[in-house]
Length: 264
Image 1 (cartoon, rainbow, N blue to C red):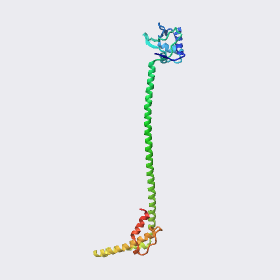
Image 2: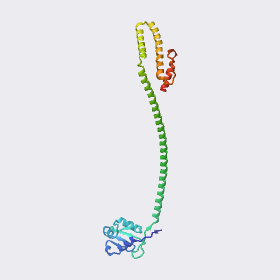
Image 3: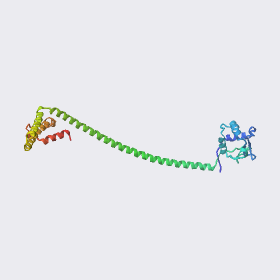
Image 4: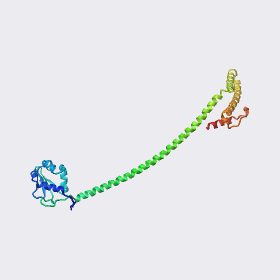
């Protein structure tokens, strides 16, 4: 079964006029059955007939047009080519129309089905890619939140370290200037002199006794020094005034105030 499409048959009108033109009788001729033609000289047909009658001079294009109108080719002797069409008659007014064979229709349907299946595969691939992209976006958001929390914690720790450093710096500064006080300077120098004399003059038993006495004096000096720290540095303006008597001074309370000052 052959389906036909309406056509103005411009190609076939031109072909029929060429076949009936005696000018090209040596180049091509009508076959004996009147249902086709023979090209005797292919080179002259390409260079002369096609050039003078058709807009496109490509022989392959001319051959494809013949196939559309139902012509089939057969090679003859001496490089001649025979084109025949059972529906063509040079003496008939009715010319062949463009034909579509069932095989071509089936091939076209097969191509459509194949292309449709390819599109389905591409669509599934796109869905998988979109899911992967969504997972990556979610993972990136989670990572961003973690980094943000860590950065805020780092900044907070840096601020606290800076505050502690400032307090330590202020304490060292005050301690440096207050230690220049002649009273405490003399106490330290006196302790060094006593230790030196004891080591140079006492016997071993006497040295033990003197060392004990020196320890007692050292504890007294330590209480006085701690009282100085608590009065000038550790009270921070909030503690009550302490007694001037060393016996009433609490050393543990002084170091506790020192630890609170630095917020250890």
